[in-house]
Length: 336
Image (cartoon, rainbow, N blue to C red; front, top):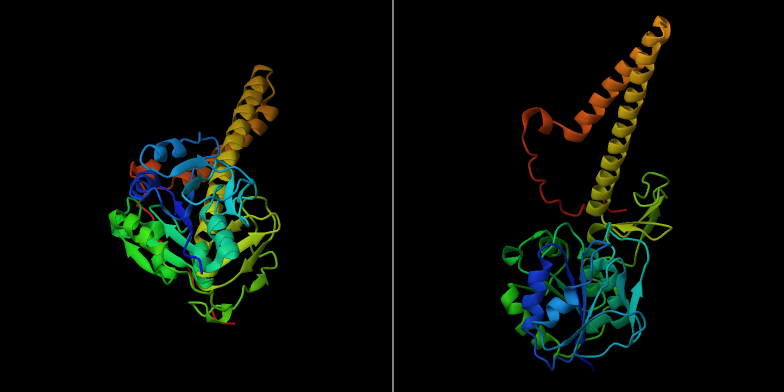
């Protein structure tokens, strides 16, 4: 029986430093393949492979779709593409974003669990929000090993803390202890994947429930369907965008913010045009037309003030900065 030879690693903010320390402590003869997703902007240059190559004796490269999986190699997700695991090959896919990210951690974890089951080790490092939690639960469901960087040791503790709060994690250790731990785990025999009915949180299969237009996808405007519950709760549209509850809330807030700024710009353009028309009517001695456009200016200014208050809240009035948002736990859905 084989060992744990597939290591899937997810990180976000603070992840570069964590990945340097982690990969730098691994031996050159590690009998495993590592897959790394670090949240990066779509326009970013892919420099992580070069950075990690300076600190590790393993082979590091940006993942190429279809290349064979080789032990002793580290595959880095390229910008604006999901990194996934196929049957003996690497998959790089430009599909829908998940939790607003591409690459995202959950597609890597999910496909690794589906393809290799108990052979997978999932590792969640420093990062914000709850990315990786659902995917790590998939790894646990299929008999894999869940490893989390100690949140107290992470630059940004939200990602590892979310995993701890919602997944039966096998190991939670400081960054310095991760390399020897992984070196030990990969040489242990992988057991058989448990039946879904015996999954760690008692979740049987993936429940899917139509929301009947209750929510729409922030990415494309389509209807969202709920799947799973508890820690595995996700929302998915037909296009393929996926969100955790926290991810959906954040994407809705981002979409609302963008819509408000567009509305404010449109209102200000309307007010500027009305002022010009009012001035033109005054030059032509057309008092009724001038009054008409002055009223339009008044209405536009009132609407603009409302939108500004919605955007800026009390920050603009008092010169204060908003308080940091408290970390949110995954909501538990009521039993059906």
